[in-house]
Length: 409
Image (cartoon, rainbow, N blue to C red; front, side, top):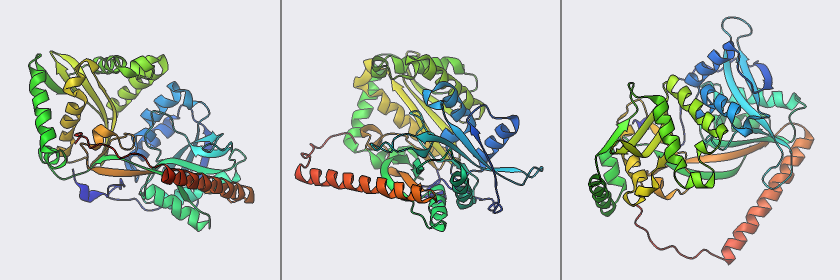
């Protein structure tokens, strides 16, 4: 990994393209199967975007739109430059939806289309075109009767080029662009070797315990760590993951990917699409040729995303999930990858104990130009601030008890 290529909260392409002309052609419609022209342009944009985001790439978002219930009602705002000639280029794609509630407030607004399998909301924008693309998108939404309320964007990388572009576009309109929520999640970004990183970030006592667990696991049979290779059966690996995840608590709760036909089809199509796009990495730990832990990563140089993990709970005493994450540190040896996003919830105890870096993720809100939009925006923001103040006062009156130290790291 080469952390000097980016800050902890950015995913900047090394050679931005020049900004587009001031006038961009806008196309807007329902999120459906893309035309052949759009499909090619979409894939090319993903390679040229200032911030990589596999969740916005065609193979991933298409699978979600077809198989997940949140796909209904999604729209796609396209920005093109170059007119109708051969030099026509796709500058940005904004998957959008109409929100019915803003937090607890029943207010209609425009939001970026996401779903519960999408862990980053950054739209694809050609490098160097961030402010111009946001300016054109906001101007287009100003004119659309479809766009009500204000614009709320969830899941931006804090202070990344796309976030900065939105802030600059709003400032040019003399309108606010507020961060309304912020969280942090684990990020892997280091120039250390896998062994050196593990030693630097995990205490000696914990490393010794993990080594003991590996030895004990080896007493049960033959332990092998594998990565999906060209000769492996992709369908077999995919079904093995679904079965492994379904065998645990997620299966009991009905939240495993294989628990419903729709999410199962989404996962299978997603894995096939990632594999065809050269984005897929799968790891597994086998005991006597049967998987007891599996991990799905998506590689999108200069970054990567850790998408899904599953392990056999019958072997929980051996920490197979931790063992496969330790194996995953080998991504540090990949010169094409500068960072890996955990896609985990904030303060996740397992991954936070292994990865030292953090990535800020924000939700931002900005009004449209109309006075109704600005009035509604300020009313909602006032209600949000009042609610936050009440929570702070309550926390001050009833502080949480101190936690006992743990040996998780």
